Image (tube, rainbow, N blue to C red; front, top):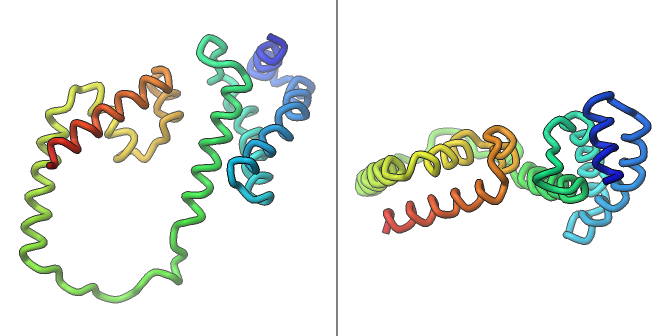
Length: 174
């Protein structure tokens, strides 16, 4: 309950002392967690700073009825690590090939069009709640946590609905 009161003070009063205590307690633990989960020291440090800044700026999103402070912070840390790793794996502009690409084979184009039509009809056949989450996750490029914050649904519900929708789409594409 001590950390919940700190989060409340940060949210309501922008209490720097409460934030400093949370930072002193959680920052080394978050960094250790990230290193144990495979991040190098530099990435862990960068990610920890980002997590703690998020804690300050998004303290209004913390809901003690949904998760403990520690769970909330470590979930943010895990998601930030994934985001940073994804960004690192993207090719740099100088690595991209330039110039016109070869024309695709006409049979490939027709096959792709047919698959696209099947996918569109499968998406339209999804229940509205699942379709909305698929739209946000794959077409809106939002993380599960961002979707949960936006919709107010629990993170587990978001993940379950997306998993069910993907299974339905997978079966429709067979």
